[in-house]
Length: 423
Ligand code: GLV
Ligand code: MN
Ligand code: MN
Image 1 (cartoon, protein in one colour):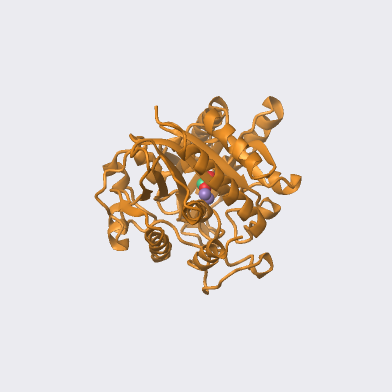
Image 2: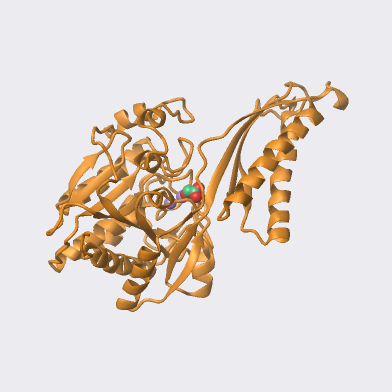
């Protein structure tokens, strides 16, 4: 493991951890204290600044687009078109881990440094990319920055989205100094490779160092607001209540039950989660008058994902009647499941063989900017094992030797792709 990459990950892994603490080994993790750096926060600015500093130090020319995506470019020796892009995101979930996203960014910077160390001649341009607001922890939907880059969402739509504090993306980008004017475009990008922690148990359990992603699950979010009637918990008879939280509990049970049934009956890879719940006014002696909930539904098969989403919306209508509440929903743009590029998948496989690392082909249940990118450019993903399969939690960890394997495979893949003649 080259110490400079380890240093990048350890140093930035302290940003957003309270109190600030450098973590070098799994044993130092605190199950209560992960990293919190949602898009637009001071901690997010800090890690962006750090990455930009490393890019400049590496001689990359840095540009920021209108939604804060960062591009660090090294020109090619034979062509300035058809670049090979690699990167990920630097925002985090609330109380998450230090490698989710940042491994893909600092791993890509490290790959360029390694190519420079050996004076490798990249014939195509190389571009390190940092996508804005991947996690959806401040702004919905997930994958915001890459959605603009692939024209799924307009710049204005993205800039006008509001975070939980009511600030727009435009405001927070301006505050951080990341409201750029570069016209981000994929017209001259040929390949994208994202390195990421698996965030699941497969590689760790099977002791396989590298996963090569073939498909990425789609993601459908349903943001629901349930309006009941706030009232006194002691005086309001049971039959006269409009309890928004009881209605919410039926929705939670429905999503969980149906997802389980679909897995059993169809052998589907469907997952359904209610991970967000705000109860108002949230007092022990008050019948809840309002609940906001966030429902997350995923599958690698679009029909299943949409099926569960539609069934959930229908169940809400019945629940509305049953409890006399009003349920309104917002449906952020859906991310459909995607199949990644066979050409890049095979190239990652060949590159891993070249550097002598064992691989396994697999699907990703987590969402990644690569699923957007795959709609426009030839895209692949390299996974490294997550200890105990934990992620989006403070105990997320990847062993340093696995990080080294990931970056070795990434570097070889980028080298090979950057040499493919432009047709
Ligand atoms: C993003 O990390 C997601 O899968 O929710
Ligand atoms: Mn991620
Ligand atoms: Mn994540």
